[in-house]
Amino acid sequence: MTPPALPELPVTRLVVWRHGRTEWNAAGRFQGQLDPPLDDVGRAQAAQAAPHLVAAGLAGRSTAVISSDLVRAVETARALTALLDVPLRQDARLREHGMGAWEGLTREEVAERYPGQYADWMAGRPVRGRGGEDHVAVADRVLAALVELPPVDVAVVVTHGGTSGRLLELLLELGPDHRRVFGPLGNCAWSELARQSGRWRLVRHNSSAGPLPEGLSVPPAERLRADRAPGVGAADGGNRPAQDADAVG
Image (cartoon, rainbow, N blue to C red; front, side, top):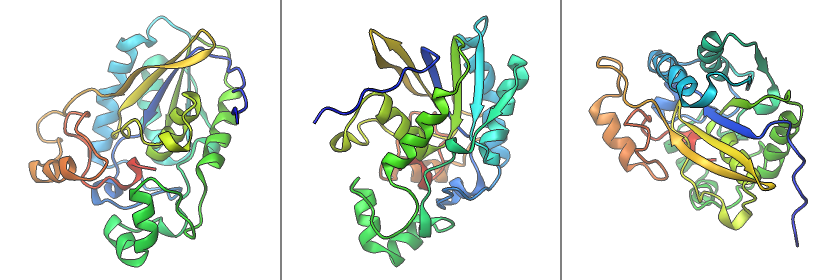
């Protein structure tokens, strides 16, 4: 069965930017739609990444910045709008994938309390019984927000690990059998998509500004655990937290 055609968006280029690190990211705790703020590392990541985003193609172009209304995304987005001198649009439809009963728990706690659900999640299968949202619902609400974007050259969408994954899958027309073809965005990493010949093309994925200055980078022991975590890579220059629960939706 052929999926329905995507509606036309008022932009032809999208930058999907994940928020900076929070203490819950560092602890491997599922945030979902709960609202912890950035930690010191996350704020430094946002401040470091924003000029890179401008230099990578925002300068001289009309740009809209739209963010999830959760504080970790808003704090990240404001680092960019301050440089671009554009207003920040906030939209609850860009919130993280709702995780139901898992929100506030660490990976280890979920694995202990809900082993069957956790096994399904790790395998990329639908997770039944935890509550929250399914993948289609997340993708639909994000798309509804993007349809209302202003007609600009580039839109920067500041969102979350799971939600960014659902958006990429939707725009690239990846079915359920191809979920997790792309690795998750690290904290403060971004992907860029362009509309070409009637379809969306992934131009770059999981780009980052590189390691933070000395004194704010993730400790070596934590970085080693991150490299070994399932579904977590090292494309962000070693600043991704250990067992970052929300990175894989």
